[in-house]
Length: 65
Image (cartoon, rainbow, N blue to C red; front, top):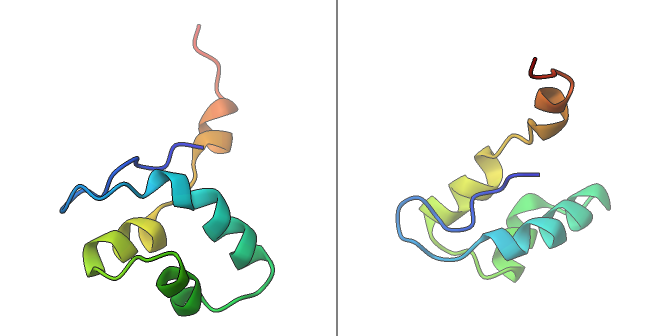
């Protein structure tokens, strides 16, 4: 999993919140409530979490020769 460690715009650390976000999302909680509870109030930080697509598993299928 490669989540940005910091927000692209403001520089706030967000990488440590990714696992908590994913766990709560799997339980079926509302995304807005999760982001509010994690302390992500700025639009830029919320966008980093909502817009991230985890492509590590997809990229790991290809071998470098």
